[in-house]
Length: 224
Image (tube, rainbow, N blue to C red):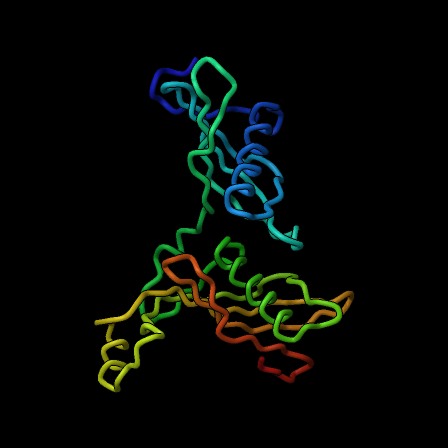
């Protein structure tokens, strides 16, 4: 039995009906509140903590949109009120790779192609390509083959920047921080696969900005 205030790891999460129900609940609540379309796959790990009621800490594997073969891990906290089955979702966020947290300015760092942030950046690049070109049959992300990232500073787009201002930006004295991802990936339409290079920014506010996409076909590169 769990001690009051101590989080205890739950065993056999794959076979636990309770854990699975909590995972589905967390996903549905997040989708409803944020207007997302995550699809539940499984609960990777779970802990429970006895407080005023019970708090469940879950690592949930889920996918978003049409690209269901790319799964991401999300951290969720579900609180069950004392003496009843009523629950509430207290926290839900993507679980990132430690490499992303160690990014520095001016120097690119190689990051895992499976990192949730990298996959999200790649998916955004493919979406941007499809939106801009309005293909009859859209491309889909097959896999990310290479990913490098660094922190950059950008000026406020509403404010003009002088030459001295640009120098200050370069040396890290002013500006807003962003993550920049330089990606190479495989994309496909039907049985045809091609290469795609992309530059994607991620702002502190959580916005994704696709700066450049290049389709690589048999040695030729097409920039959009």
